[in-house]
Every structure is written in C-alpha cells, then in structure tokens.
Image 1 (cartoon, rainbow, N blue to C red):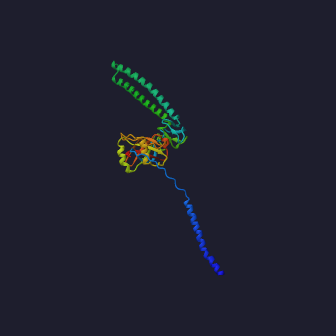
Image 2: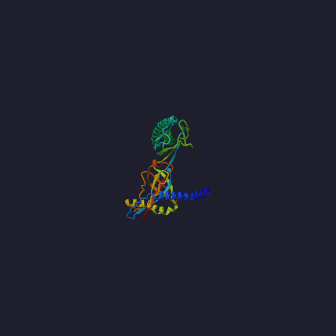
Image 3: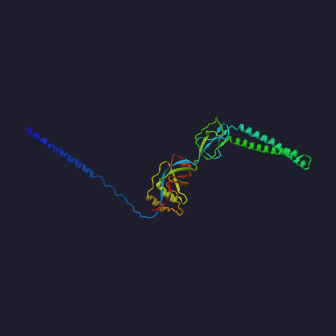
Length: 321
C-alpha cells in the first residue's frame, strides 16, 4: 500500500504542472487582449493646386571678412598711448595709436623757418631782377650782368618751391604720429603695446582690422546644380540668403513650398526670384556670384553672421508644381 500511494503522488505532479502552465498562458492572453485600441488618425483633405515652386540650393558656407588691413606706422618713434580695446569695432579715421611727436614737431618748425628765410631771399632777388631788366633795356649794363641777376632770382624761386615741399613732408610726418584706422571694422589682438619703439614700414603690424559690415560668405554647391545656376544666373544674378549658426536647417518639403508659393506668388518676369524668408535670423544678401563649384554672397548684417560658418541658400529659379 505504501508503494502504491507514492506512485500515485508522483503521477499527479505532471498534471499539476500542466494545470499551472495553462492558467499562466490564459492569464497572459487575457492581459494582452485588454490593451486599448489605437485612436483613429485625423486626415485632412485639401484641393490640389498648380503653383510655381522655387528651386532652393542649400550649402554650408564659411564667413570671411570683406577685407583685412594690417595697420603699420609710417614714422619711427615710441608709442605713447593706445586709444582702443582689443576686439573693439572702430570707424575709419578713428585714432588708434599715438607716437611721440616731439621730433616731428621740431622738424616741422625748422622747415617753416627755412621757408620764411628763403621767401625773403626770393623777394629781394625778384626785385633786383626787375631793376636789372630796366637797366638792361636802357643799355646801362651789359647782358652778362643782367643774366647773373635773373639766374639768382630763378634759383631763389626754385629753392622756395623746395622749401614748400619740405614743409609739406614735415607736416605729413607730424600728422602720421597719430595712427588712424584706414577702414571701419573689428580690431584683433594688440600686437605692439604702449612703450615699444616702432619703425616705418616694419614687418610687424600694430593691429589687424577686419571689415565685417558687410561680410562675405563663401559656399560651394554640387556640380550637378551647375545647369540651373547657369540657366537662371544669366538673367541678372541670383538671390542668396544666409543663416548664421554653422548648421544648415532642414530642407523645406514640396508641400510647404507649394503652400508658400500659392499664398505669395513669386513674379519671375525678369528671371529673378525673391529671397527666401526662412526665419527672423535669415539675412538677405545684396548680391551673389556663382561659379562652377561655388559662389559668394555679401550679407548686410556682419554682427549676426560673425562666426565660424553659416549656411546659405540660393533660389535659382522656379518649377511648375
């Protein structure tokens, strides 16, 4: 009896395990069926319209200054003062450096004194030449004597012109003791500080000024777009829009371009299209030149585009939607 009872218990174990497995599968299936149904998607229907959609070519560009000037002194001397801060925007003609002007003031005064002396000498020589002409006409003196006085007067006049040139050069050197900005732009690092001795035409500039208003944006486009650029660029140029930030924005979809073109039709009678209005920070350029593999755009706001790069987009024409 004992052996039979153990056999019955062992035989009931698989049945119990199967019952547990069946209940688990049933519970899992029941939970899976309780997941709520997905809501229906809303679909809007709009009437299809035919409109002109512009071709837009987007490319990453590099911001570069319109021009860069290395400021160097035109006279020798010690820098006595610096009138700007590094990175400051300066205007054309603004004073940047002052060089010790005392030697050039003395040279200017000396040139003025020499001019005054030779002016008096020339006035006397001119009066003598006039008197000798009268005496020569009356045949009181010989022609040789008259020629001597006329030569003296001409020499005094030539000396006077030389003195005037010396005064102008002395005034030029005196004025150049104040180093002024040749262009308007943003200054770089101060390369020569106060107290240093500088020389005219030295190899080391005092400071470098970069013009950033307007600023130049260079960008390259794929060669596959060259036919479109040549086709529409020959009609008067292409409009270019630059967006600062260094990362190109997502390209607009055909639907969005068609909607914009329908709302604001673009008149392209002369082959020119409007500048893309992508956002408040997008700046239109005053012109653009395109080549086989690249192009340049001039942006009006240099401060907004001042940075490592920008993305430029050019509308090169229109296509039928």
